Image (cartoon, rainbow, N blue to C red; front, top):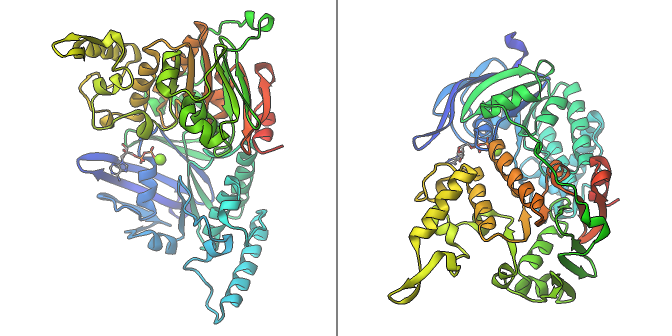
Length: 509
Ligand SMILES: Nc1ncnc2c1ncn2[C@@H]1O[C@H](COP(=O)(O)OP(=O)(O)O)[C@@H](O)[C@H]1O
Ligand SMILES: [Mg+2]
């Protein structure tokens, strides 16, 4: 590759945290004016590599060449001077400020009067949008009043305003509807046509294959290889990412729900003014929607009506489980009625990080007769029984490292989630409330978790699956409701699943 064509080159770049290599001797280069994908499983080291490039973290060894010249990038301000800009995984805009103020922060044009400055900045921004074919007009809106897609556009416009030549986007599509994704990539293509270089961090192979020119694959902190996108395919990239062959969609059997049409009784019913949902026996009901449209509140009310039924629904709802009105039941009562939960955030809601797998497995099960016995002081927990159960589950779910004494905080996200699934299924619930079971989980563990959910369904259990990954819902669910603006805004039967149609409803259509 010709030096003058290369925007960025990594040469033997390493970054450690303690004695852990987040990046080890990275070698790859990014062609000027291209869209370059950077893919890898969770924890592969993608964000770290780009933070090194953006000057957030210094490298321990190796060098980075910008436009063919080795530079030591000291900090983000320095990176921006070199024409490198980054949109982080979690946006960094000030919520209560206007778009214009967010973009101008620290970059006001040098005139005397503030108003003049704003006018001039706005003029320049409008010019930028025109030049790059970006649609945006809400300069005086506050960030919190914008959709996620709009906020992202503001981040990109901000980078252009700062004259970035290389734009790094860290998992930009994770929070978007299919329509917003399409618009984002249309915009990125226009930027590319104008000569900008785009680095796209992603774990979604489909979008990488569709929208990039070349792609670098990382695994466990190392670069596995760089490919020209048109010369590779999903299977090859997946194998490079994971180190073995994987399937992304559930391949196993799907029992036909025959009784349902004849006998559409429900096992769970939640009826309120804004949200009404019924769960039928043996089905997986998906809850789709862009984050922040009422799904979280609904799940909280379902899983802990004693607190959140009042808080989010003012107590005005009917909630029935297996025909029984359960109004303001506690989580323990729900559990005893056969309702199991995988909460939204496994770290803050599901696990004690500084406790081992056995202690975590016992959470919520400490009164289960299977794990207690009569001791000197009455009923006591029988640790040997718990440990045996954990060990059985370590085997069944292939949890690594395979030791019941490991602190869960030391395990990878995928293995933590497998433990949470194992604990959910252990008391054999008949109704499962499962939220984001594969968020931040590696591809290998996703397969296992999907299999476990589908197996429960095939056994006749009923599942409500909350997910922000539309592909996951389309793959697994029998039916789907879509949330928008705190309401159920649409419903789809499996045969009507079409990402485009569902995306429209997610966007409020
Ligand atoms: N500031 C940090 N301190 C300690 N470990 C970190 C830090 N940042 C990242 N890591 C670790 O480095 C590895 C790579 O992380 P990251 O670059 O965020 O991966 P990716 O973006 O590919 O998911 C992970 O194991 C992560 O836990
Ligand atoms: Mg990352």
